[in-house]
Length: 292
Image 1 (cartoon, rainbow, N blue to C red):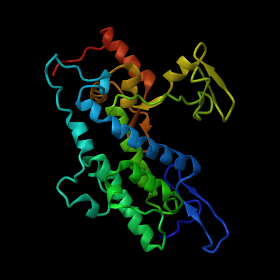
Image 2 (image 1 turned 135 degrees about the horizontal axis):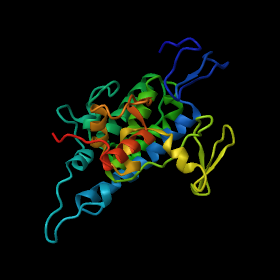
Image 3 (image 1 turned 135 degrees about the vertical axis):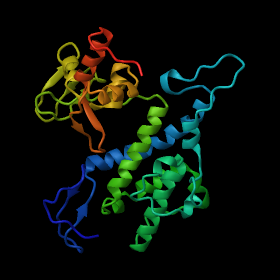
Image 4 (image 1 turned 60 degrees about the horizontal axis):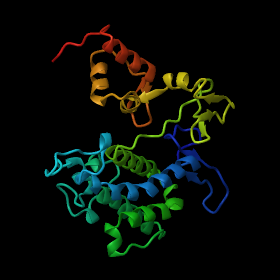
């Protein structure tokens, strides 16, 4: 891997470290916060996966679960079946599959093959470099918890690889996908209205403090106003306002909404206040939508 000169633009969450050692310049591609996020994702993925079969029996799922008439079977949750699938669609058996880096089809794989492809890559690449961060038994390749522990065990080697950012992003996306499937909403952590840094919840989220400038926000005071100025993805806006995400997408296509930028994954960001304003105007019939 060629080293980029100091000052070169790096992906979000990346830090360059210059130090003296046997190798001279040392570079890591994830900072401490990104490593902690990576570990948090790996820790929760097996737990979320274990809850997925409950959706197939109608016990839990999005919008409070699946409700069916007495004596009938719940509708087949195809998306959950795909997540639980242990095969790679249209490819070789996943343990001999090709390099997962740069592939747009990973989201078609079940959870175990998706994580397993990364474990296989890490093991092969580390072995070639003379590193052996983990040992895998045959049974471990179908054990999601073992696969996630293997990736965590390889962290000290992984953070030296440029492609670790792609791995970390894929694990974050996989965790978010399963949380969404199970109907788990993301924790709301607003940005400071003064310095735009992320605030930290205090006393169980009853109020927030900005670690950068020290500003405090209470629900009785400014948190409600703080929420209104947040920039969020369309899906996040939909969750906070109780809307269906396709509706926001339609408002965008009709020119009723304009994105204010993109997040690190290239998804459009909207002003939550602007989305709420369109919602109120449509409800009050100040805006009339033509039926398709």
